[in-house]
Length: 115
Image 1 (tube, rainbow, N blue to C red):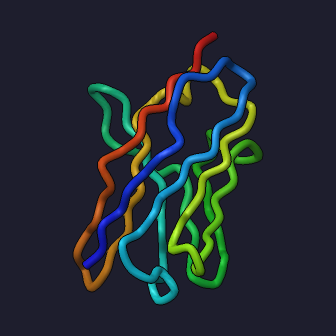
Image 2: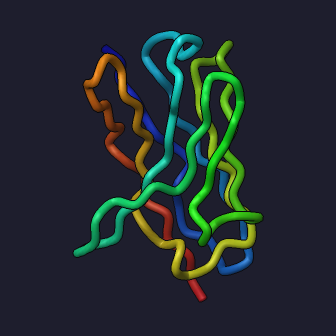
C-alpha cells in the first residue's frame, strides 16, 4: 500500500512555471513506475509523464520539451517541473502508481494557467 499526496499547484500566467510534488507514504525505491496524469472536466484522465525506477521517462506529445518528471527516492517524492505553461495545461494533476496490480491515486492538485 501507499498513499500519495500532491502539492504545488496554483494559478500562473501563460509562459510561467510550476513544480508539482508527489509525496509517498512509503519508500518508492522499489516502485518501478511512477506517473503524473491530468484531467479536465468532462474528459478522461490523460497520462502526462512517467518515470521508471531506473530513471527512464516518457511524456505525452503535448508536454514534450516543456515538462520534466523526476524522482528522489531518498525523499520518497516524484516531481513534475512544468515550464512554458499554456492555458491548455489547465487541469487537475494527479500522481499515480501501481503496486501488485492495485492502482493508487493521489487526491490531485489544481493547475490553472491564465492567458
